[in-house]
Length: 257
Ligand SMILES: [Zn+2]
Image 1: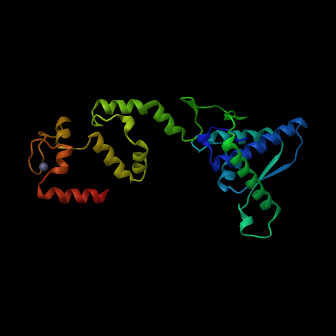
Image 2: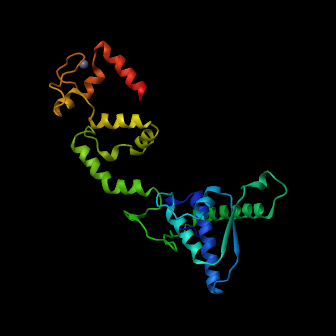
Image 3: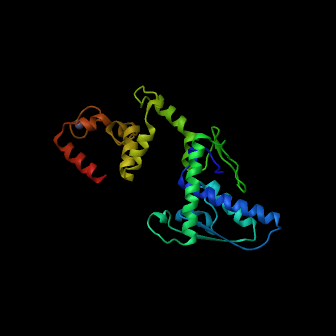
């Protein structure tokens, strides 16, 4: 029932799929009965899901799971039905004895969905990648892209080329780039401040304003360390320079990051 590859599955995707299925089913019924009018109320315990899929705005390709959101909006536009939505708290059965119909139906649907989830663990359905009303599809390496389009496109078009470039510059110390834990690095980098990211990028690519670089760029007459007068001020030298004033400057710069 739920479209998309296994890796795309999750609670947000499942809620969107539920709304998508309701709309495609209602559309099929209204087409059969030659477009009658009426009102359909969609109740869901995912507030963000309702907001993203049922609002009046056009879908944004930068949104997570934008393809199914777009298909939902396209489905809404196809009928004369008035679509309404209502957010309701989930799992109320555990905390309240008397439930309104909508809360009870929501809990019942939740139970059915869990039962189906258990069933497909042992009897997996083939992935359904086709969505009615989709504007276009993006596939990279035989995988359909439905989220983080910008970063996936960047990775696909430039990722390997960038790795090869820096590998040829011997910046990975002879390591195979496949053995580097890029996911862990991404996690660390995204936790940094923007200044720390700039500094890290400059440091690892060796594009800092060292004496060596400044001399290369014609900004200084020599590559000498301005503190201890070492012949060549490189990135490594900046970290190892024993001049008494360097530590104070270094501490102050790190604090400023
Ligand atoms: Zn020095």
